[in-house]
Every structure is written in C-alpha cells, then in structure tokens.
Length: 69
Image 1 (cartoon, helix red, strand yellow):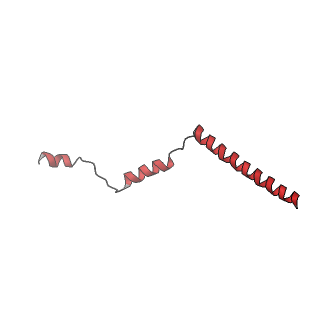
Image 2: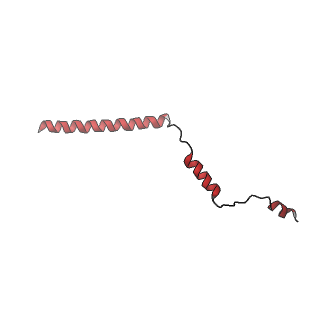
Image 3: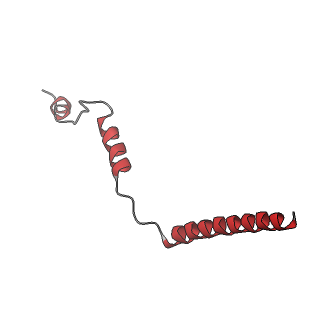
C-alpha cells in the first residue's frame, strides 16, 4: 500500500457535518457574561438619572399649567 494511502486512513473526518460549528456556537451563546464594566455602569446610571430629570421636568410643567388655569 502506498504511503499516502496509509496516511489517509488516519486523517480525521467529520462524521457529522456542522457539529463542530454547532458546538462553537453553543459555547459562545452559553458562555457566562462578565460583570458590566465601570463605563457601562456609569452610562446606565446616567441614562437612569436623565430619565428621572425628564420625568421631574414634565411633572413640574404639568403642575405649573394647573396653577395658571
């Protein structure tokens, strides 16, 4: 038997097409997500505070409209 034929019998093959890729995708999707960074936390806090300011401003405007009537 030629050397190339002997070597080919030991070459890996994919018995299930797409199995390796499916495993990689599953690993990516199920990987634990890290804690949010300080920058992300600061941004979330900023967005929350900004929404609270907008809510307060709309409440003040509606309160002033009620007094003028």
